[in-house]
Image (cartoon, rainbow, N blue to C red):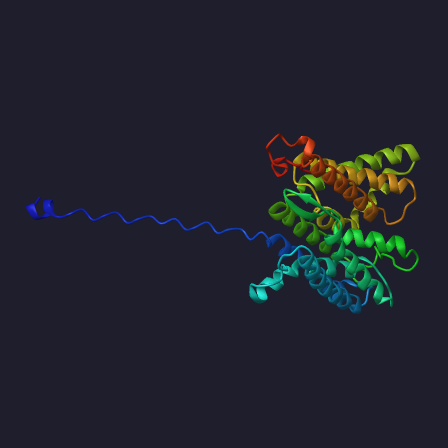
Length: 325
């Protein structure tokens, strides 16, 4: 080996650069849900055979957007803060309208108001308004505890009995043959993906379905009804939407595993009790009842955690850990 080769410096090894981990958009789940609901609504009216009018969709969206801006502005003024939609340009306003859009677009096909479009506007206003009125403190922030769409549907179905209704058969009346299976299967696959990747509410779904089957068996044994007849409701698109998209709302359902199991089982129990009491539109009332109970427990837990009697001498009530449900 030559002396020049020995004296030549060793070339430095190339530096390894690690690509920064891309942060997950916390609104991606909401964006996905809103996109699914919008596509489902458009296909429903154009292909599937929705019996609601297009006017219901536009009235629902107009009511939802206007109420969202108005209620947020009023709440911001009342609490001496800037509205969520202020600043950040057009994108900030789009992100702010994601939740109102999701609520409005789902309300447009969940209920049937015929020519009484003012009832659709009222229902959406109730849904949006419930987020600002029915709130409790969780982890230092005020959060709504009632599922907005479900709460509004339950209110209008009870308040306007015989005037407002729901058409469980009216989602796929124009589909025939294999499409009667393909469309529900696609909805199930997309909903399952949504809950696995974004909401983390798979235990809620499993608890709800398992408890539903259990209570269906008890009803069949006690009342003498055929067991398959108690389960056939699970095969309808309304119940599929209810299972995968409504009870799994991450803003109004618990995140802890044990609480998810109690929440899902509680909905099934309430459903069974209301069904045996011959109450119509059972699915909406059952979720409303369980969410209301959860809200009361959250309020009681917050009051208990911040009670002066439980604050150590010289400590702060804000340091107490609230009950997580």
